[in-house]
Structure formats: structure tokens, C-alpha cells
Image 1 (tube, rainbow, N blue to C red):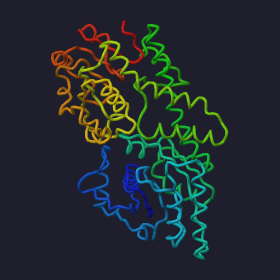
Image 2 (image 1 turned 30 degrees about the vertical axis):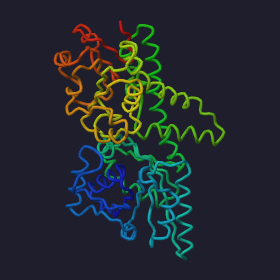
Image 3 (image 1 turned 90 degrees about the horizontal axis):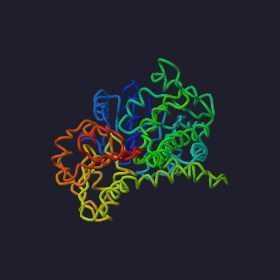
Image 4 (image 1 turned 60 degrees about the horizontal axis):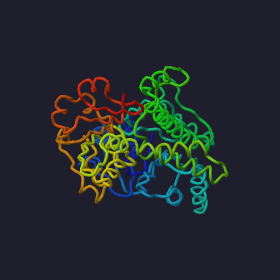
Length: 431
């Protein structure tokens, strides 16, 4: 199929690469030139190689010309990122004033409920104003990609949610997504607003699980329970399962915080009091204080204390620091007068940018162990692979005080305590 993908960010490039990989002819449109010869402006495992191979094979063309992108497209996928600051209304107006033939538009934007129908209305209005007789269909197709695992999620989706309002759109989507449903049918057709709400409800459910586990962890720390055992007891129930049941320092990134906020705002506008989701967001905000509290309880005044941090991205296998709990902690530590040394295998550059002027007060180590000399504590904030089985003997010799705050419950606290470490985990009492 001839498919155009509009957008310059992570989601748009993943769409272009994966659809091209399945043999489609892809025209990738962005307002600024897309040059992949020098790499990508973000890290996503395997994506650059897939883009390069499909461009070389002639299945992927990059353009900044909207006329080229829309000339022969059967399907147009809207995948602009929030950073591009492109409004859905402006996009729809441009499309309506440019297209010369019917096209099925696929809305993958992070937008308010009802936006897909608004795009359809604007495009068809502009087409009619030009005296053209055809109409376009617009499909709501929310994406559920996890950063660091986007290609795997795209190529082997749990489900493909499609909000459609007509037969032509349904047929086009069935054809487009056929390669992704070979083993069993993953396509879920529904109403347009059903699909839009499904996206936000999914994020709300995941965020709720995380916040609930963090709230139970707070109780576990006061009553002598070990949250890891509690988690296993909960997750073994087939009605619940283990996914997103890990306590930690709170969720971050762009997706979950944004989607939860969008649902809360949508409820307020509709006169629905979103009590539960408001509590979820508040618990996540409070969880951002957890690591600082553990440090203060053990070390007292943090003025002049050196704190090492492993992990700056909001999740492993990405360089994204958007709403990262690590950035929150660094700012808290600097405000308390602490000396901060930090390391992340991927996110150092983005962390510097995110911290702005505060970055001048942070030591960014060249290696994970370089962050440790004379440290009063190490805080694990992201469960990156290099941090999973470190040399604890070497760490104890480097650190001023063998104190580990494990924000991901990655380590065996009992073993560390037997080895002379002071250990604090989420939902794990010091005893």
C-alpha cells in the first residue's frame, strides 16, 4: 500500500520504519528535513537500522513537501509529537486544502476525545469548499508503544484498536494491518470515541496499578512487611497478574502523566469528578519524595553530603528524561545542599538539557563506578542492565558509606545487609 506518515518524532519514525518493513511504500513527511545519516535525535533500539535499510531498498522516502506526501497516498497517518506543537485543526485544514483524491486518514495523535471527528469535519469542509465531490474517512488508531520496546510492540501488538465510522475505512485498515495479525486477529473495530477513550483508559489503568502498589508499599514500610513478597502474593492471582505491579519511585515519561491529566480534565469539563484518577496522580507526586526521605532518615542533614545516582531516564533502554523521577530527586538534593554525582548509559545529554542551569552543579560521571568515590549513598533510580549485577565489593571500597537506596527493588536487601551495606527498598522495612 502507499502510505504517508506525518511527523518528525519517535512515534512517526517507528510507524514509517515498521510499515515499510512489511513492504508498504512509505512517504515520511515532516516540516523540517529528516536526515538519518547522522543518527537519530533519540534512542530506540533497532530503529535507525530499520529506517536505513528500508530507505536503501526504496520503500521509504523522506520529504518536506505536503503535495508529495499526499499525491498518491492511499492512507495518511498523523503521528506528530507534542514537541512539534502542531494543532489537529491546522493539520486538518492543510490536508483538506491539499488532497486531490480520497484518502483514509489515521489519527494517532495524543489529543482530546472528539478530535478525530473534528479532523474529519474540517478536512471534508475544506474539500467541499474547493468544489471536489469526494469525502475522506478518518480513523482513530491509538498507539500503545513503550519507549525502548517500540519496534517489538509495533510488530507484535497485543491488539490494534481502530475507531471507524464507515466500510471503506474498515476495509483499508484490515488491509494495512493484515501483516500484523497473521497468527490471530488482533484488530478490534469500534466507534471512534470508543477508540480514543480506550487509549486514555489504558494509561489510567497502568498508572493506577503503579500508584496502588506504591501506596501499599508505604504501609508495608511501617508494618514490617516485605513488599516483594506482597507483590508475589498479589500477582499470582490470575485475575490480577504481575504486569505493572512493581513498586518504585513513581511513573514518569510523557504518556502516563499526560494521559491521566487529560482524563481528569475531560472529567472536569463534563462535570464528572475523577476522584480515583486524581488520587492516582497525587500518589505519584508524593512518591517522588520517597528517595529523599530515605536519605534524610539515614544521613540527617544532607548539606554537603555526596549522593550518587544511577539512572536518569524514566525507564531503561531509552534516553528520555521527561517527567523522570531522577530529575525530581536531583533537584530536591541540590535544594538540600547535597553534592550530586550521576550516571546513565543513555540519558546523560538529555539530563543536562532538562536540568538547565542546575546541571552545572551536578557531576556527570563517565562510568557508573566513577559516580561512587566518597559517596555517602547510592540511589538506584532506573533499572538499566549495567546496574543489575554490579560488583558490590568494589562499590563498598569506593563509597564513603555503604548505603544503597534501591528505588526499583532490584537488589537482594538481606544479602547486602549481611555484606555490611545499609539497604533501603521500596516497601521494605529497614529490619
